[in-house]
Amino acid sequence: MSYAIPTSNINMEPFMKMPPDFNRKSIIMRTDKVYECEIINIVRLTDMEKLFHLRIIDPVEAELFKFKPGQFVMVELPGFGEMPISLSGSTQRKGHIGLCVRKSGKVTGMLHKAVVGAKIGIRGPFGTFFPMERMAGNNILLIAGGLGLAPLRGPIYWVNEHRSEYKDVHLLYGTKKPEQILFDYQFDMWARIYDFDIRLIVEEPDDRWKGRVGLITKLFDDMTIDTGNTYAIVCGPPVMFKFVCTHLNKIGLPMDRMFVDLERRMHCGMGKCCRCMVGSTFTCVDGPVMDYWTVMNLKEAI
Image (cartoon, rainbow, N blue to C red; front, side, top):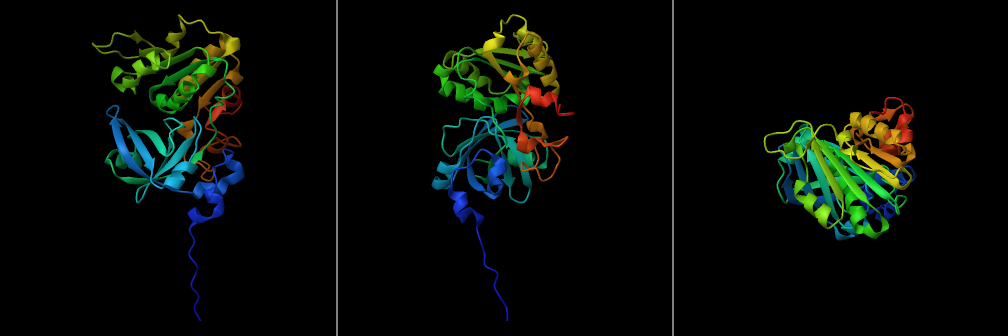
């Protein structure tokens, strides 16, 4: 006698139809949920980076998907693999997701070949997030290096959508070369409409560059920072964290008021592959967003 094994679809289970709990440890089964998405627009930012606008196809799933600034998703390309990518957009646009992707390997290279209308899958959201509610009523320092401006767009949109809750907002952004600057078409809007103070700097200028030259810490030279009334968010290469956060700490900004994004350590997003492990901490589960005090107490975190 033969028996047929019943098929099942995890996406149809009752617990999968509920809004996500942002505490990933308490609902780890949700990591199997795949949202089918369609690429609705592609913006070429540089020779290496593209911004992909995605739409969650199922309207019910579009309502269910929620995330907070600083979280990331696992992007699945059937037949090629998956990769962790920070969510780079507004939390208020239901079912619409922005992903800034640098071409750096097999999966990202295939995604860069995709065209509008292509279908991909995402799982998540994963990880911790920037405590934007806790920062309300304070000045905000947004500091990014290179690709670090991509995850910083989440806090940028959040602050603008709740602009009356925050005081002065400063955006400091540095790249190695002028042609590596991301989202330059939005700087004027962020300055004039969002009321942000924007400061740019590059390390290796070309003949057309008229702005500042040097390391990003040079942007602090003519700034007055109220350390008792300011929070800082720092995204970029880990080596930048040491210089930026050390400078801020020296002028009196407490380490628990600085938040960094360790997204470069992300792999599976669930603490299974152990590739992001630092000591006894899984960066993808306990991070990627951490305050600098926690990071300094994790050996080899940066």
